[in-house]
Image 1 (cartoon, rainbow, N blue to C red):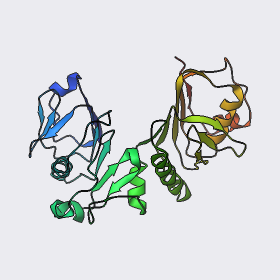
Image 2: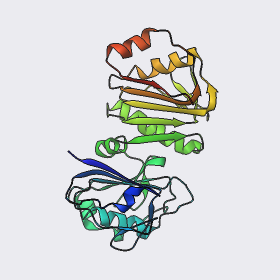
Image 3: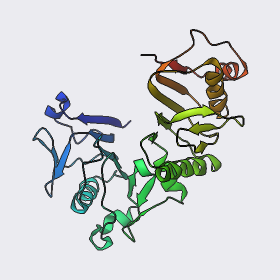
Length: 277
């Protein structure tokens, strides 16, 4: 079974050797990527990460939009990944990306192996034929893009939020598993149709293939019983649903067991979890 490995800036894991013979399902570099030197990944710590022969997926998560990846770094990361015969996808999150990449410099092996390069924050993938960022329209790409957390942040532009909503609806309509949706300070209310209304005014209709949802509000924002029941009703429409997390909010001291909560409990949903800070 594959292993997920995180390397975070300042974390002691940076000083350990990642054993290249152990299957690595996901290498997640959280604010630790510094650059690519043509062969190895440079970390913020000054260490280098040599090629991994068993990695399946790489995520670069910079945590700040001002960090810009160059065309050369994107190509370098693809070349780094394809040294593993297991490599399938490169995820780029929370960083500025080149508007396009010269398709003539993509390694041929990336195209022949259908490697997927994803800008998760904008719900776009890199078309290796044109070098342009595009909306996904095939099942394989949509499935990969929904296999990890998708975040709708209050600070996203309305067009970015709409792209994310379109992707989620396409996945739901095709009954593609949606691993997790995180609403970061973007939840506003549940409307009379049971849909989530975002702070931007956009609607996130009910997703019938979602597994997990995380709603992070403003600190100490109150969510009343009516809103909690609305959220429970929203998620119970998915037979796949497993876990709900509400964070940074003030919740009622108790929640009456209504139809939605009963339905979730009867299906063995363990993760109706509330975090109150």
